[in-house]
Length: 246
Image: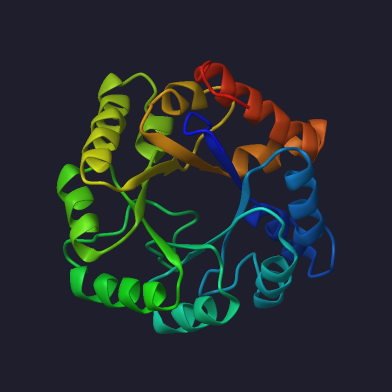
């Protein structure tokens, strides 16, 4: 894939959220994965939370053995999840902060305060041959610590940008964070709160090579279908990077 191609990984957690509301078998995250791949997604992201509020262990097992693109496994930095990752061997693990009381992820991993714990987790995962990314705020100190701890990549938390589009400082922080990360030799990703209407400025950041987007795609799928929702996002991303060779 040319370097100019911006990868889209679709987070299908909220397909499972809808299923868990009734406790049945539909809608199926596995079917959602196949539809996203057919529509042009470069990969699939899921977050197996400790409280199992949406994606379940059985889903992760099915997805890991059926995926034909790229499996990005989001998880808390805890031994239980590390053991699962080492067993299923996803292409990438993204370490994320997690609180039981939160509705969704509220911010980036505190890699400075939790450096020792994060470093141990990174070491175990990389020893298992797994690419490791850290979900962090676009803070230069956190980005440099990510490099020091041995991660391969970081995903910039774009929630502040998505929630404050009228504040140019939020986008400027992402632009600067991407530059710092690239200068450190890290792969630069972004995600959280991105939609067709706001993805353009983030997609246009040249150092960013991957976007993880879920809620807005799954929400849009109610009206246009999942495959078309993925295609809409793909078009919005590509429009912001006209040099991409698709």
